[in-house]
Length: 284
Image 1 (cartoon, rainbow, N blue to C red):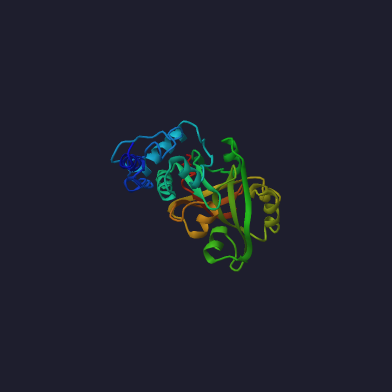
Image 2: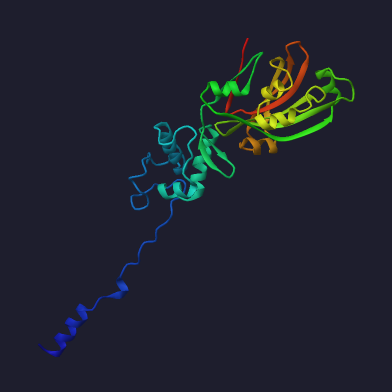
C-alpha cells in the first residue's frame, strides 16, 4: 500500500464532527398543544386527544371522570397542583385553570390553607316551625358541631327592642357563632337574646355549642319559629373566610324570630348559609 492510499483511508475513517445534528430542544406543553408519549405518562393519563380542544379543558374532563368513577369520593381532597402537574405533564397554570373550571361548576371547592375538595351533596335544611340545626344534620348521617366566635353584652337597638318586646335601653346578649357538618363550615350566625332572662346564656353555649341546650338551662324547654325571611347575596369577606368559600360566592340569609311556648320572643337571628352546601326547604 502506497503512502497516498493510507492517507486517503485515514481521511475516510475520521468522523465529520461538523455534520452531527444538534439535539432538538423539547418545548413544554402549552394550553392547546397535543401531549406526546415522551411528554406524558400515558399509563396515568387517559383523556381525549382531539385537536382543537384546549388542554386544560381535556384535563378538567378527565378529573370529572375520575370523580364520577369514585377515584375521589365526596369530601375527598384532590392531589396538589404539583402532583397533578406531574401526572398530566403540564405547568401549574394549566392545572389551576382546569380545577377552576370544576369549581365554577360546583364539583370541587377550595378551602383556604387546606386544599381543594370534592363537594358533598348539598345538605337538605328544612325551615319549619321547629328547626334545630343539630337534629337536621344528625338525621342526614353527618356530625353537627358549633363554636362561639365572639359574644357581646350590649344595649338593644330600637329595631331589636321592638322585635323582642323589650323596654327601651334593655340589654341583650349578641352571639356570633359558626356551625359545621362533618367539620365543614355550613353557616355563620348572629343572634340576640334578652340578657335579663338569659343571664348565663353565653357560658352555656360555650360549653355545649347548642342554643337549644343553652335555653334549656334557663328553663325554656322548647321554642318555635314565629317568622323566617329568606334572601340571598354575595358573601362578605369575613363570611367567606369563616365559611371557607370564594369571596364572590353566594350566601343564603335567613332572618329569624323565635318564641317560647307562650309566644314570648326569645331570639332574633340572622344566619348566612354557604349556598353551595345547603338546600333550604320551606315546610308547610
